[in-house]
Length: 295
Ligand SMILES: [Mn+2]
Image 1: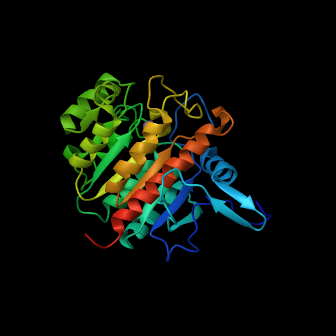
Image 2: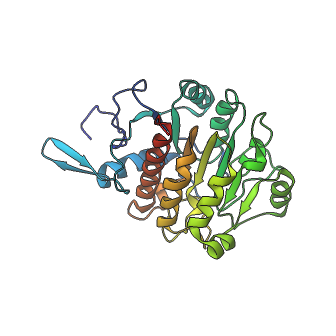
């Protein structure tokens, strides 16, 4: 990076917020984390720096982007830099009112609640797809990264019956009780193995309503592919499966998405940071297409 220039995702090529259809932002906070492994506040910077290294090739004065999907083309994203956690709700509300999709790189998972509060304040009825090794439905321990879904269920306009939790495999009893009570569709790892990622993606798209947000905790991915997280759990998704989910379920996304819990301190040579960038790129490409006019 040239001195004085802001570090941004190279695939965010829109010159400003107004001319973009997707606004990407980071939240470099881990105040809602209770993991013994510290370091997720470094997620946004690591994801951008790794993306600069691996997602673009410099040739003299110009550079060329590499997409992970055929025909992705220009994504029309703007990277707004990092936003303070306390400002996230208002920032997201402004973007959604202006019909822009938001995409956040974290930071600990409790940031998702701030984003969804912003969305809930201006969208009548909406669904979420929550992809995580944990259901984050703990209601007995205050507000933190383990209570996100529990907290979200108290919002006014969310539709739990058309929302999903995908990839959970470290589940407390009180969490399962809450998932069942709320009627959230639960897709555990066994179902993903039984039916395959293609069927699961189709199922998710058939369940959600017209207004959709997707939240991805990188610990949903197997630690073999994503070691750079705060709470790793063996037996998760493969890198290619989460990228497939991003580019398929992503087509249903019109509100926003996030990729949370990137912890560069535990990463191995940037592999988790790079995966985070690719998930966001796929998600942004898929979501943008849904906004195109036409049949
Ligand atoms: Mn989580």
